[in-house]
Length: 269
Image (cartoon, rainbow, N blue to C red; front, side, top):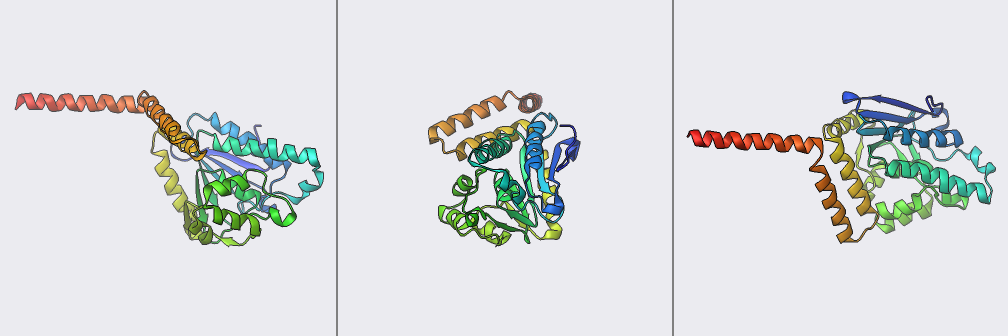
């Protein structure tokens, strides 16, 4: 897809190392319909091929991040098509984010409800405005979050917190409440959110792309509950690989030159 109608896709930032992907249905609080889901899946696959991009800024246009699924989609589901929506479309988007080699920073304001929270849970860092409202409401309609939300709430939070969010179906949790539960990275006043997120992204972009990618991958493997020895082995392999990366090779060469220079000065003394 060269052009999108329900999302925005733009590359910029320091040395064009930031790709901004924005949900762009502000008149519907960026609710997820079929077109938006398809475009989002395409965008997160596309950004993996952007060689110069280190960080993805994931946000929403207008006053909300995402209010969840568009209710106009529900009547189109039956037993089979709802499985495709959950098991193919939704799973595909979440995996395209989680397995993405870029660091995904979610900038959240307004509403982050139901499917919107599920998208947020797939980000690597989450920064929210203090006015943002959070929750998953599916249980009030007799269903459950189906894009990984039920599982990720259990793994991202202490289980009693996750149960409360899921089973109450509330949609009015404040950013401060969710942060205290352990979910968000940072909470900022609304007027400071853009600047603070830009600062975080600048810090990330100053780091080598290879180590960012490997760091994200090793943390993800640990998050999946691998045995300790297996996770440690993956960490060691990642470090060994990084020692052959261009950045570390250059650092080693510089270090060797510095050592030789010190030795020469010592001989001269």
